[in-house]
Length: 359
Image 1 (cartoon, rainbow, N blue to C red):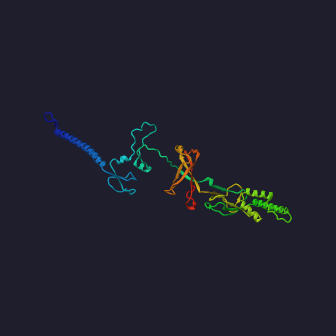
Image 2 (image 1 turned 60 degrees about the vertical axis):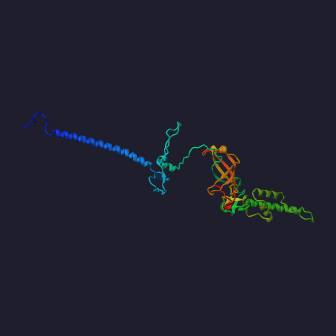
Image 3 (image 1 turned 90 degrees about the vertical axis):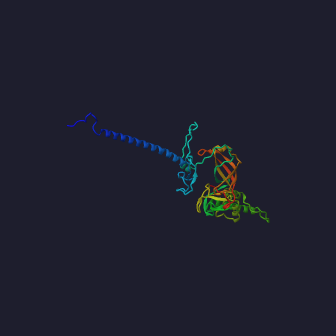
């Protein structure tokens, strides 16, 4: 049986283990301190490197703000040459929100990315006080002068025999025949006219003195009434005189244009039946045209009749057409809150004799 050494001391090896244990604790503390020191030094060094990098020049694409690099070159998206931008340019591209909204209800800060600014095409300018110009810009449309429009219809029933103007857009002259129409109603009145003329001629011959010369034939009361009926039916006086001279009713009635202009509508075909009322043709005289412009409600007080106006068209870049305000419409468009204004302009030159075309 063995026992503790003399004197009651610790067993052999205990002191060696204690010394080893404290040595390990000290080593671990030193490693931890070194790691902390290294991390702190790295953070300070990174900040210094970032500050130095921010001071360097940057290059960006004007069309694609997201493309930024620290050297010259071309944009990999669109191929544009990169533009130099000083430090802080990235922050300046962003619309920084104000610290406060000024205490005005309803205002809020807006933060836009460079991509969004480029997409919406936003531009900024310094606020300045300046006098408001007298000119107004408004969108308008060219329209035909309603006083130069003519709708051609007949006052009798019949059938279209010939269609001499078969296409719209053609220019016709005043008095030009557009179509011919056969009408039994007109033929019957023409026959009454010729019969009345024959009776009047016999009465005149019977009333002449023996051995004298007979007076020129007259239509008489019945003939005058028949002629008046033809005129009311729309038959031209020259056509009535031709019937009297020919001595027999005409086969058809010519339909003539009452104005010079362009045929804007044709509603008949050869052989079609026609009735009084519906228009057969529409002819527009475009020697003068209207411009109908829509002016915003807040600018309505600046308008007055006789005001000078200038028309600019995409079809004639660089050209200006002068006119005057002829009429201001009495009502405001409820949907767009705009007031319509009518300008009148002369219209000469160009293909077909006109330069400005409706629509």
